[in-house]
Amino acid sequence: MSNRLFSERLNAELDEIGMPQRVDERIETFAKFIDLPKFKAQAVLNGTTIPDEQVLALLARQLEVNVLWLLGKADSKH
Image (cartoon, rainbow, N blue to C red):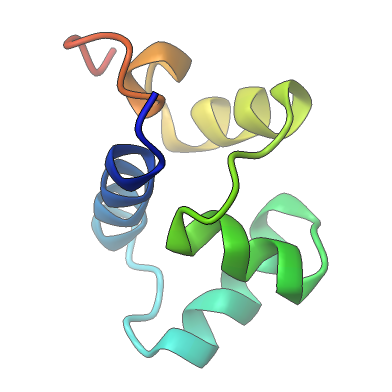
């Protein structure tokens, strides 16, 4: 799995739902969105780390996308 692809897909979906573009605002909003500390939210947004299964499931549900697509393991978004 590519962390870069995960990060690109995640950020594209966050753009679609209107999450702020400014990095500091996006990190803060995303941290609240998935209930993570800001440093972990930043690592997820940057693709430094992939969240655990529970957070991935929450993200997929909130963004209405397939977890496997988000991870780059499937071509179908839904």
